Length: 153
Image (spheres, one colour):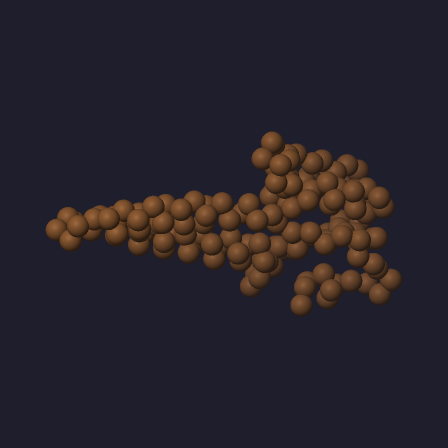
């Protein structure tokens, strides 16, 4: 069950539910490609040569798996929700860190996207409120939709 469903007030309605973009898996994908290349070289080596490519394959495969699991836990444990009354940002599974801001306290919502972010539809969102701001929300999927949900209020 999602965290935000547990903390919604009876008269509160959800406008937007967002999360992190799949780009968070970049390191896992790169390590997987390196493991694939090392595996192809390992298949082409003769039995008399030292199994360097086989060792590289095993190392890169292990790094790819560790990176994938880490990224999956981060992505699955992050919730970004906009309701008609507040913005909720939750990070973590076992230990949890949440940030909430009333919609009426939001001054600006800044969206930053480089060219890759524009093409793949991800970016960094900075929500500034009266008296302070949150840390930037990085690698957010559909950042303009998040921004629009916040400023419609």
